[in-house]
Length: 79
Image (cartoon, rainbow, N blue to C red):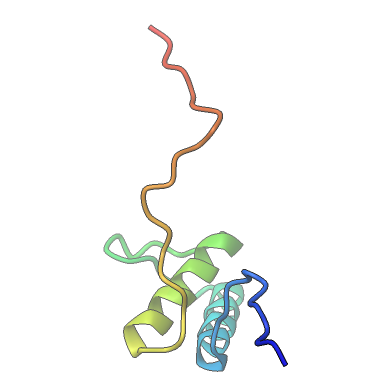
């Protein structure tokens, strides 16, 4: 039997999903604060990012952040 190939999907651990779930609840309640500024988070995407960041700090299974990605569209600067 041949070994299965991974589908290329990113895998997250259960602990990571619990952290994100917690962050989403805090956002809904209005108690989720962003980093240094301490402002209340209203964005769903930002809440997920905070949850994943907390999970990373606690050592949960979270894929590494993507770095150095270049966009194909490449915005042009207007002068």
